[in-house]
Amino acid sequence: MPSNAVVRPAAAIDDEAVRAKLVHGSDWPIVALPDPALVGVEGMHEAMDEANWLRRDVLIKRRLGLGHDYWERAGRVLRVGQSGSD
Figure 1 (cartoon, rainbow, N blue to C red):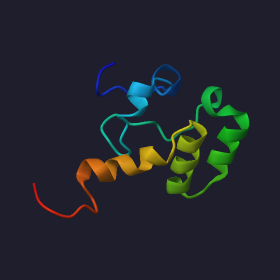
Figure 2 (figure 1 turned 135 degrees about the horizontal axis):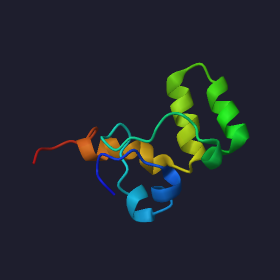
Figure 3 (figure 1 turned 30 degrees about the horizontal axis):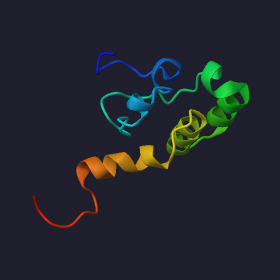
Figure 4 (figure 1 turned 135 degrees about the vertical axis):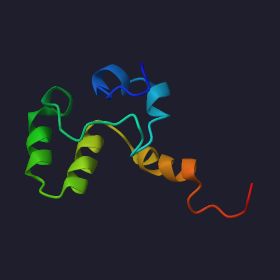
């Protein structure tokens, strides 16, 4: 897949190699608009009923099965909270 492609979770997110490399806020975005085919109709309504766009983003990504590691990966990549120098 091209690195600038919008992730269509049905095609990519089920691939563990892809999931292990996804970084929140990266240049390979997961669209923050719920696809009912992926999150279900209930999940779509739950997300769109959320007025706060940050909470909506989290709801969608949780429905897509992205776990805690997804949210922490950017910090590891950026070395946020690590001490010492390289």
